[in-house]
Length: 172
Image 1: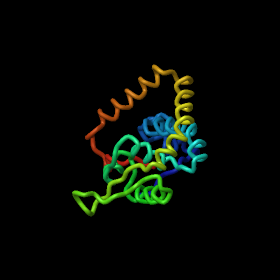
Image 2: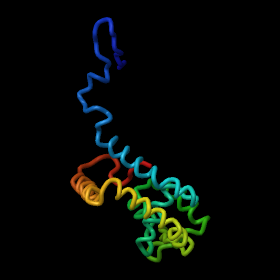
Image 3: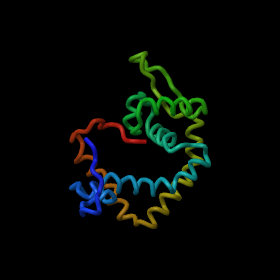
């Protein structure tokens, strides 16, 4: 099937204008992506200063909140695809920021935890990160930020189980 292009001579509208959908810039996924980008733009310079990617930082943040976790659960928690997570874990392990051990219950599985070096690195990033959060809160408003986080949580819960090809992994 071939696409028909607009023909100004006969007054036809471009094909994209004939699609009965909301404007691209008003789509929920695009709005969420733009907001995420605006937020991450604030954090990236600090992460770069410490030699971290967004995904590496996400892994360290997830690991800092728990004792140890199985790799597939970490992928779900951090919204990363398995192959990406494997590469990230290799890089973090090479820098001694995480530790991997074989799971006692199942020798085929590995458990991951943050190392002392990882905790030290997080402690050095934390003041800048918290200052960025404070500035975002100052600009957007504490009440609005709390409401936004609550609404995003509600949106996530309301869409849980709705379906989709890959419910557990978000794009990187």
